[in-house]
Image (cartoon, rainbow, N blue to C red; front, top):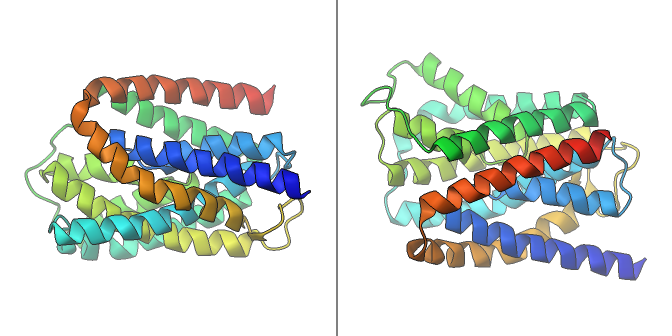
Length: 271
């Protein structure tokens, strides 16, 4: 038992190393990497397929809470956070996160796997295309419209265990925000997505059969802490490495890898 736990811990530490480097190197959220890798690790340890994706998604949000806090401090010092956008998106993001977490908790593991595959595939196709379309040179003035946008982003993101950067950054740049402001603001939105979702998953997963030890509901504490320990330190390394590589080419390579992961996940889960 102790040896299994040690192996589990080591695999998660390695996951944190690579997810942190890739997140910093490619500018993608760690969740899009953490969820499928955690899925395969949990599957190798015999966790029930009924809850395996719920645990992966919920635990990823726990990691994102810790990493987004660190990121927010950095971007705040650089004045990259648009406070007005955070205010306008605050209610919609939290409502979307809560709604998405309840919805994902209520559906089957099979359905959650399909949702992840669909949304991850959309993200990978977006990375392959690489074009950011500009809809307007300014953010919408309507609070209701801003709440609607943030609600959709919160719902989709929390459903697949990501901080929302893959949706938030293109949306903000589409409304004329420069990439640095978009990324900094996205980090703050990521905390608004991950924290409520994290809390809901701890409640909805309470007393569910098949949950591994050391869990709060669907959130596995070992997964959260193990991945966070290494990813927090390796993300800055990835960011430094990004200046030495062709980011567009790397993103296309990762997009293909993500697509292959989605195909593999589908085959592995359903066949």
